[in-house]
Image 1 (cartoon, protein in one colour):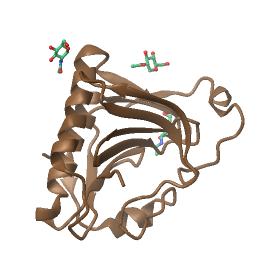
Image 2: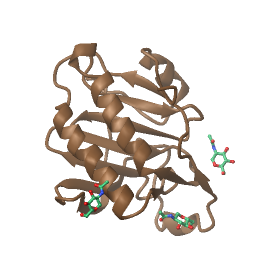
Image 3: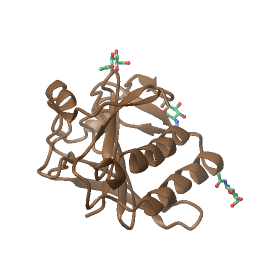
Length: 193
Ligand SMILES: *[C@@H]1O[C@H](CO)[C@@H](O)[C@H](O)[C@H]1NC(C)=O
Ligand SMILES: *[C@@H]1O[C@H](CO)[C@@H](O)[C@H](O)[C@H]1NC(C)=O
Ligand SMILES: *[C@@H]1O[C@H](CO)[C@@H](O)[C@H](O)[C@H]1NC(C)=O
């Protein structure tokens, strides 16, 4: 599991990133979220997928911002290593079975839609991609303001499984996140509430 190194010190990540704020619960919170699209994915079409932007992510969205980065380079970040930070203490985390439904839906899409997906540059209208099923919510957030990121669905599914189990109540946590070693993105798993 070298790809998902477990680092227990959330403060180290917060100190190195000004793009996010951490709420009282420890989870990174989205402020002033603007949703651009919503759909349902997976075999049962029961996992909600949303594309959105939070004012907390890097920079403000300007009008026509997507068009403003017309020839953004595309960085393939599949298999990139990331560092895990769990939110303590235990209690109030997502149900692992609900997270498994999301992981399975992402794998379903990986096989039946496309092995990869694109996430637009930080600061664009759809730089955050969220998957939600009952108590479990996970999202992929781009932190690179100048590039589109291509990521592998299999990797996201693995992270959902990894974070929901390694950051569960038995480990004195209620979710967590994995931040790319080069800071270009992170994946968070948390309670939907
Ligand atoms: C892809 O779709 C087929 C047909 O619905 C299904 O049998 C298969 O399990 C799906 N793949 C995954 C990984 O779920
Ligand atoms: C991601 O973007 C690149 C460049 O625009 C494109 O070639 C590729 O097909 C896109 N991949 C997906 C999965 O949409
Ligand atoms: C963001 O993407 C650009 C273009 O590919 C790259 O030069 C830069 O290093 C990336 N930023 C980070 C923090 O990796």
